[in-house]
Amino acid sequence: MNRRIVSALLLFPLLSTFSWGAGPTERKAQDFKINMVDGSKVSLGQYQGKVVVLAMIMTTCPHCQAATRILATLQKEFGPKGLQVLEAALDQKPAESVPVFIKNFNPPFPVGYTTVAESVAFMQLSSKKRYYVPYVTFIDRDGMIRGQYVGDDPFNAEKAQTANSRAMVTKLVNGKDAARK
Image (cartoon, rainbow, N blue to C red):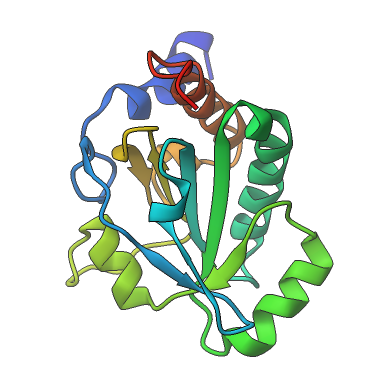
């Protein structure tokens, strides 16, 4: 594939205000709660003023596991600059699967669970369509959704996912509000 086509594929999702099958971006993120296996909840609201990447995954999905590795790298690199990654598993039996996932992947960020219905509602996806995981949402320091992508979106394509995620996080962390912490 020539470089111009590859560049266009990498940049297209960053330029679009609508994502491949996902709801409109450029909107205020509603407060979303992730259930933790210990019975507590993690809320988007507790990370106000930070850049948040919210990924909704299936713990057994290889593509989601790859996304977790990418996001773990970004959390370690950009965490001190104001990034917070959160993951919510959409598994049928999260009390069993999430602890095993955490043990196997050791993510440096909270991993809990939610329902497919709650994740679809948060992302404002059509309930009449099936979506591939992971669902990834990028939220700026002001709580505005600046990008969201489902698993089959070109943003999440295997060879583009790392570069696209890094570019989006870099843009948000170093954005106009980066000085505010």
